[in-house]
Figure 1: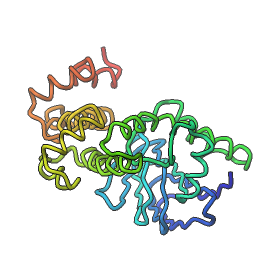
Figure 2: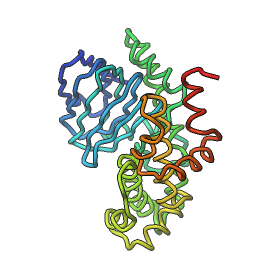
Figure 3: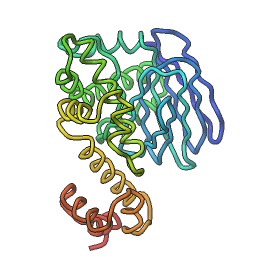
Length: 284
């Protein structure tokens, strides 16, 4: 694997273009800074500390520690790190990712490519990302990059099942439907703090509302509304961990009525928001 390593210095701006269609570019940034990707590339973005804002053709997405964002081929990607952020990005052309994933994926995965999604990142993936960010020699960098890509492939495995559940006579048609739905799903995730109605989401997917809800549920095994509620609760959990906002304000920030938020939070996480905040603070 051919790797090009870039270090983004604190507070600086870096413009990146891929040097080789079959190579990967690793970017390590810290203490703020901004990145502009000047060519069409697909990427994996991992905050190791703090959070990032990633802008593509869709609305910006905020990504926090404990998450990983996968972006599809796009020539308008920009990234902004918060003041205390330490993060890692892994970029490649469509050809580079296709070759890499073909050699690493199971043979049952047809036309392997990165699928756009924000995933929860486990400790193993975060550890591998840190190893890549800190690797000094070419041999260590290559091994760390392979290990990280394996972790991302594992995260994306369930998405191939979603493709299979999409309508279409051929795999290509199913994948086309999946990507349309997944872009809407990513929009819900990025804008879950806003009021979102089904008609607008259906229009985004170019479906009627009834067909959109039916197809979304077939692919992802939950309705768009259920996914919206889940994303709001995940965002609330992040705010509990990363801010001192009162719980009532966290509910308001996620467009939730307080009593409904309390019930949904307990059902989703098995504890109340207040008790979770106490656990985070090490109280009781």
